[in-house]
Length: 270
Ligand code: DGL
Image (cartoon, rainbow, N blue to C red; front, side, top):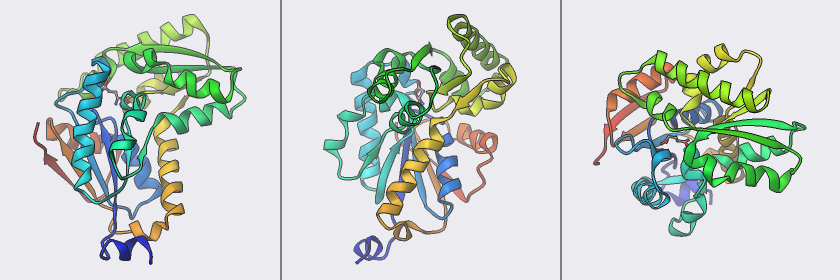
């Protein structure tokens, strides 16, 4: 009996959660790898940025999103948010679906490289927890991580009135701060909102290679589903987005990221 017959012939969905629109960068990568999977997304835009919150607040807000996913027949939930992923250990024991961190696959990828110096840009919360550093150094202690946190960049990328000049200025100041510390050639975009502005990063630093953890997390999701018999999750390749905030930000982000799959945007309760 495969997973589909166990589920009364109903294909199961892939859940993705984030503090806001940023996790749509993960949706894009999952849809690329698994174009016929149905994805259900929750973005807590009413409470973004998580990166300026306390750990207790982040855990409570995340549990509310995972509770939402409980009723949605998900095969798994990908935590697209790096900030939440720094406290990923707090969640698995409370839920009966597998929960995937975005940091784990990126850290493993970097640790397996022969790089000696790697930059990391993320929220201040993510940087302070030292989770990237810990997970990389557990596998490869010879890599020096040069980290800079931003209080503002995620919120700027989330704002309904997108201010490209302000985003560009923040990116420029983060890259200069990093360059002053060490001239890194590889930088992890350790906040799922940041790849939304990849064109600006590339323009500011054309010689730097930016590592996007979204693609690596999507690869892990695919690997898991294949190990479970992926055909059980094949359906029409649709996307249902729920947000506690403004639905228009999601319309904008779909366009910016070039996501064209059939979709619906729902306002969720705050
Ligand atoms: N999406 C979050 C992350 O990946 C950052 C945004 C926030 O601060 O809520 O870290």
